[in-house]
Length: 360
Image (cartoon, rainbow, N blue to C red; front, side, top):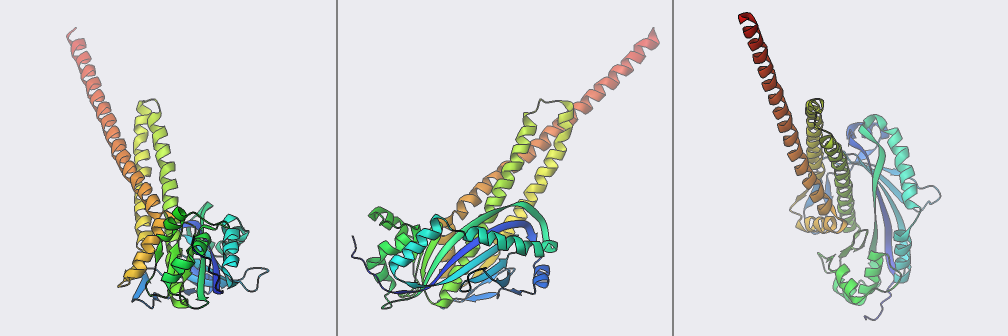
């Protein structure tokens, strides 16, 4: 086991809490109602060029009741996500940071306080919401930014002498972790310069960087979590719609049920188009221009929190829904053909009856 290292740390602890509140937001109206600003289109990273939001979210500052030291920021994304950020200054030792991480990840009142702020904000901008949801999906993520570590150690040194502490922070564990678990966690370590480091986990991250680099990491982690939230929503929506169609298909086949198929197919097609459009919007909300490090950092973050998994689930269900749509249309056409052919037969029988009746 590595010998413990206990340098003094200075930075901040950030809690991100995201809520999927509606299908879409009219950001110009949100900005007008709140008197807020849009996030700057370019986020500078000292190591590269820049990255751009296709539709920059609206940002405003807020307050956390009872905690004057906390910085609170609310962000509104056009695809219906509200993000609440709490940032608290941190100064202490590794043991203090590990204790804080464990406390936050195992359970804190911050999610409920964030939800209360989100509800108050959403109530103010309700006229700017398109198809608001009655119940909200949510995600949270914790980031521990260290901007100063005693001795200004390079990333390689931190990954050597402080690997246990970093891993415990990322996992939220007070107890030391096994060597196997350490290797698993530290596979997610990334650096651009010798003196910066990001170690990402599925619900928390440790970032050692300058203020500018930390801001870029924060934006990418927040965006990745907003995508996760959207794909979770699409997955739930498609699951419900597919269940309705399956129930319809399990009904006893009758002429009346057959003539209901166009309505089922039409509703399913509407959902398909909506999900496809919203997926593309969420997927293309951010652009990387010559900033390959940020692109790699985003892909790592998305992979860690499960964005590709939920995206794959949603895409599979989209394909299933497309197959069902074609099946419903085919079934209706077959039923209609049967009805038309039956009518032709009935007409012929009636004519034959008249013919034979006339000969008698």
